[in-house]
Image (tube, rainbow, N blue to C red):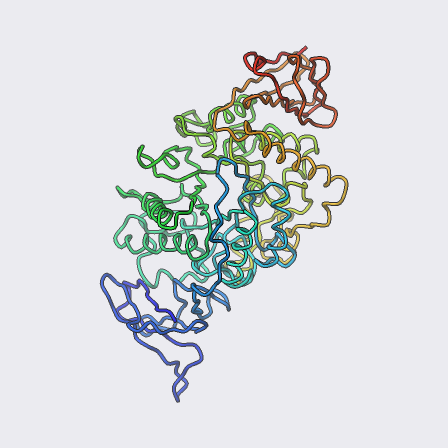
Length: 596
């Protein structure tokens, strides 16, 4: 049995409309909710049994889903279903999340990770992830969105797991199974906008404001009249996932899109409330931001004037590495491409820390200011950097295997917490495309046309852009696990496994200290970068010219590209090759490498 409450300041009367119950005239039976203060309504007698289907009727209008619905079994326009959140028998009381400093994050889209595309099917792949060396599984958004398949960033029923993925109990079984294997679980949540289809929040209260313009329409109301109720809704949602579903952290989508000029911002409030939950449960709960601001205040402790988030994605490192490996200079990659950009990212985290950005036409960012580089995530690929490309092509689709392996080595030896995107560890041949299943034909057409125009402006032929609404676009994005056994994919998988094993074995690769980084180029056109992590020296040949460098006596090659060797005090690297060496304490005082 459970109760029901809703914030609906726009309504003078709210009624509960029970699905399947009707009077002699066929009119569904309803029960009035009792009005409280500031637009809050509740059932005076909390007597809704689990499994009850219902809608909410505002001022006599047709019923709509409950904004706090725990499950939408018939989709985002259907009736809400009462869920008993206390019924699941958890077995993870003894679980403790792995330390963030030792983390390896793996980003997954539930619908394409397995053929079945469900929470329960994902459980069957957890042992593989543990064996690979993953410590934190990050799920792309699972809150209910329109249609059967999509990325999830247009969710509208934020408390309801997407029905095509499974039931709330199925999601809890997945989290419990992860914890049984020592895996922490992070959930991607979207609070900067909601999808238009199935979004009924605007009927209940001032969830949106026209004060600011956004790419998605009216902005979420975080600082205008009525924003207290809006903030309460989103904070409660965060606490709900962390407590009721035992998630170990949340990834906050695009916090730079929060338009909030309040003295006490929504992000501060969220961090404070999650901190209070963390203390009450005596279990770590992470908040990880996606941010384009290069603003260290996000991840600085509240006691030092920051917002108190734990970590953030670091696009500067990705862009620096991607531009060097691919040679791409379009869009935001125009700001990158120099070897020193990558060196700066490795040393300082942000490349743009007050520096002028030609892409933005202004100075951008500020220095990290002594924060540990492990507050940043480093990656070669993620859902955005793959899926927002016209064809959804992965970086390995256009690079030689040598360049791909070089990129992986730099990610997994860098001073950041590394993140992998599903399938990258075997250079999956399947793309990750932008796909939707909007039931509103007008919206589906508008999304398709908008995407075609976006890429046409970049000089791409419109007829070659996959149609997001076509079932084939979604089907093509499902991982093909069988290809792991093919030699060309097995080679990359073995490389990732070796790198992850080295990361587990070598404490220096998990050190919070910023590395010493050097770059150089010789007359033959070879250019390289080297950086030191304690006794380990990583040397990357970022050129098509083979390289030979002197190393001190005793320098042992722990891991290297095919053809790499360290013999007779000479390190040899093939084109686009990498070597990871162990050096003695004496050698560490003389880290410079010069071409022979």
